[in-house]
Image (cartoon, rainbow, N blue to C red; front, top):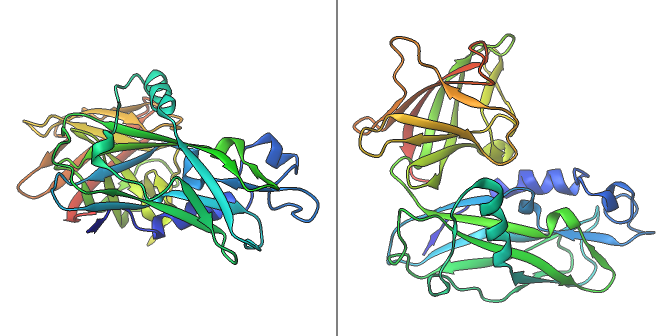
Length: 310
């Protein structure tokens, strides 16, 4: 049985959520959350609901699991004093709303492809997290040219707990992994001062469609472009600059570049003489020179060499 997502990628998101990064009026007004659990209800949320979650699966007859997406978090500085039941509902409207918002044609994942042991997440006493595993016994019936999706909503929690409004709806986008998906060694530099120091780091390129992958930075548990901030020091540009690269499946030339949901800039490839943005299938290497906001002084010179599968 193959596990799709590592729990380590979740912790950065959970830590950000559980330390007060909720953009929720009820939380900000101290109606619930970690600010004063003795005098106000504690919030419950799905920490990965802050943005749609892209999952790549192998086209395989062997069982695969997605173990760290359906996760519920107790938004408190203290662990649960007793078991907490967080009830989920499958919500296909979320997928339809995602399509409307993004101009996409994501289809509901066929029920025959996956199983859930329950629709209730239990946060055990003494813990702050609980989760459910999605099992895919076989994906051979999936079409690699179709993007699938599932929507989940927290419908109720145990008495005394409040559902965090901005962390109750989770959209999971599922694609059959394309040939560009994997772990890569990213080297390069940014030409914007003072971020011009070279960087050398491992990143994930995550399938977002039949011919596209997005740059994902595991140390921060989110999409985004690493940058060099000092000699030998690598930081993260943040999700506001989170490129999604599209390739021609025949020529392997990079033909499109967009931002992931929540990205705050526009994107374009550099077209200077001698620059060819492409994927080399023989070397499993991407050469990508791109810029944001139409500014040649906001340009990245990225080289990605395949390390192995995610």
